[in-house]
Image 1 (cartoon, rainbow, N blue to C red):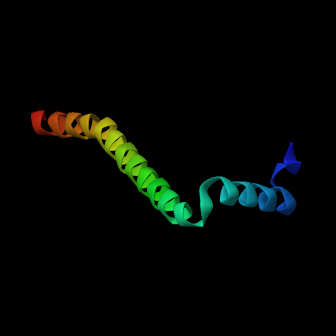
Image 2: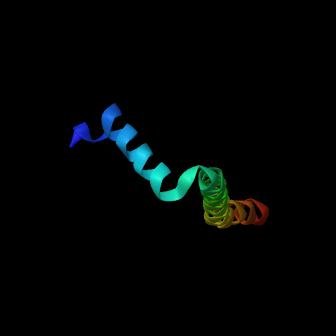
Length: 66
């Protein structure tokens, strides 16, 4: 299982991707992938902020009632 990412495998994979998508489509494909990952990270950050926010407001509410 650990032999999956050997340099020869990565080179063969790169050649297959180059043949399938062509040289002109690769920059567009990379840009789209980068934008998608950036959107995913922003979305996950928003989810974690929402999860942590109620705990923060509950703590502030408890401090205000003392």
